[in-house]
Image (cartoon, rainbow, N blue to C red):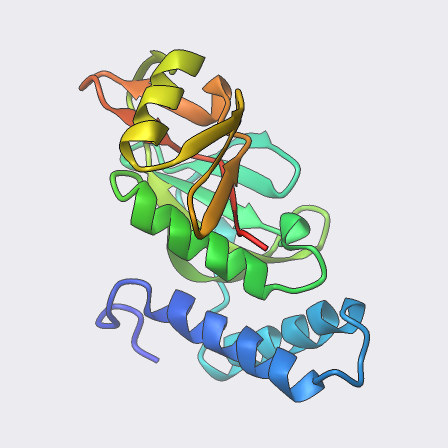
Length: 196
């Protein structure tokens, strides 16, 4: 696979397809907990077959922070690199890919692009994502977040949770939503899932 000439999100789309096919192959005979293990095995094979391993030591990046699922680095310029350990996907990695696709749909001013795979400092298998680095004036306020989400067609359930007919967005709190120096809001790290 030629990463330099591949279309944006090609790796993301292929990995999403692999996780979906792995889940279908597992079928109803297996408990859902086994989906994730099999999906990770298939993604490791995909990474090996297509030379999609990212060696962080070859990137000029600086460690910034660690959250529940991400180790976050900055390239000192325009991008943030996130190693996502799939923690919030639950027992089915398809949830991760649904979330990233929905994020890019609703918050296209700060999209994720998947560039490969790596192991984090805890030796957990991770997707390597890049996202634009946002020059922020401050964190967004709860009122600004609510107004923005309502303009996107979402209804508020709680101060940090919203839904429309298809999706639930949660953890939309000020430290996950930045007010940029350009006056726009940037949802850098919310959680999104399909509505049941």
